[in-house]
Amino acid sequence: MIKTSLTQKTTLLVAAVFCASLLGGCATTDDMNKAQASATQAEQKADQANATANAAKSEADQANSTAGQADTTANAAKSEADAAKSEADAAMQEVQKLSDEVNRMFKKTMQK
Image (cartoon, rainbow, N blue to C red):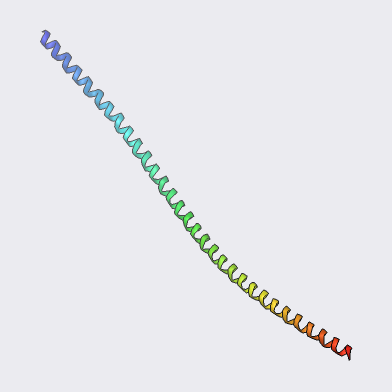
């Protein structure tokens, strides 16, 4: 009788452990499903962040290109301005030479 009672108790204990492990397995499966859903959501957010970063990089590249073009245009304008200043300086020197010549000729005329 003791053996039978012990066997029954052992069987009940094994069945209880088995049921508990099944319930634990269900909880674990539920937790796994939640974790998978969270991972999927995190992956979607990462993809969105990556798309946003790529768009920002593209805009930055375009801005950099535009800045490079503006720099080139500014350098060309500066070069033209420098050339114009150089021509103006040369013209002023010529005017000064002519003015000096006219003054010299006027003085000669006045001396006679």
